[in-house]
Image (cartoon, rainbow, N blue to C red; front, top):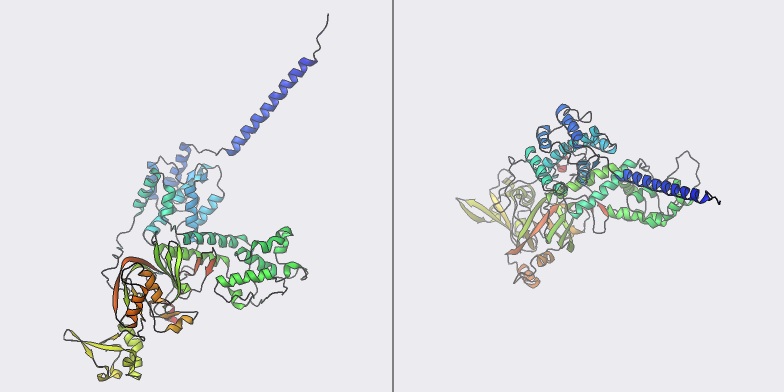
Length: 599
């Protein structure tokens, strides 16, 4: 009898075993992959337990140190939600939570004041977030508490810099907007209700964004703020020696550090650094003074690429673009990045003065840059120099609408200017009024009467005793020049031409008594009156040349914004930096006084 060999049967068993083992390995891999990609889950009862702990038992020491500011309002808020988180998805921040953290960082980055967000604790706790319910719920309640604080500040206009300076008297203007009512403050209960409604409508992200400017200019500055905060936190930044001077083809131990600085600031093109990335990374770092090094090595050469990068840095700081590391350039390079970040954060707040929609066509004045732009659909239709208020009469930040143009204007001299500026001249030369086309008016028995200036003893007059008004007639000597652009406001500020055209040749142009003088008034008038019947350029020129004072009401009012940006990102995506001529960039949380006081 033939016996069947066991080998085929054994092969079948072994084959089946192999397939089973392979299937087990695949299943194990799937389980491991699923476990890696599966978020840890915090059960509702666990969340409630620790939320109650922080809100009721430990509201004075959340995360071991923070006293909640708004627990009276937010504890009922969480009670309505069965203590379920808002900003946390189990053990991770939601998109709204991440956005709120970004907004809190950029708001507090200028150190203008103690904002009360407990940001240091929040940063620490979010960095070390783990699958610990007690820690995650602490972050949750801290974020809600910070949100209420931030929302109150944003909605109650507490985050606006450059206000209340008092350089110009405030008077009632019937056409201006209604004044802010100090009693109409948004309460924390209202904010919590707003938060609750946003969650119900599934628009928490939108609520955070609505409390923060959404202008492209603001968002571009956000990127630069993050850049400089990263540099400050890198630990690699240090200043160059105060006496260091370098130019093309020089060699120096600190050239690698200068190259690193300009690369971090965004001034050095990546192609100029490409050879560094292929080499030892140590070549991007300057050796210590006591280390051995060979200056003949390429990294120590102040080459053409570095000179070009320095020119870019100089251009965006409004310095002569020589490509030479001189004293003024070194001073700007040596400003610590955290201080640059503070300035950027403060300038971001200045966007809060503006409405969300600026208008298809609008006039934008940047005082710190001494420039005006007429914007149309996001593009510059007109660009010109301006002259702004001097240090004693700083031009205020404001947002209004140009409604009237006055061609060949007369000028009613403000009493302050009449007694402080003109009266001293009249005491020396009484004929000055006739030379410059002024008329003198006196109010007698309820009636205004013209007075012959030759009959007045000017030397007997003073600031306390000056019973006259001065009006300058239209003409080439008129202080307002050929055109006045009016936007009724309570500080009597407007745009106008000037008879002193030579002043536009100066680099520093803080020279007026508060109003803004424009370089190209006729061209600006032509653009603003475009499409308005009867007012082509030839008609404008004719009225002006004939000294025919004419008021024109714009059919479509044009928004005008007088802003003060010492840092902004230009159309090419480049961070621009200007001198703080008005000393409005707050330092160490202290509000500045009028810089003219110390003059």
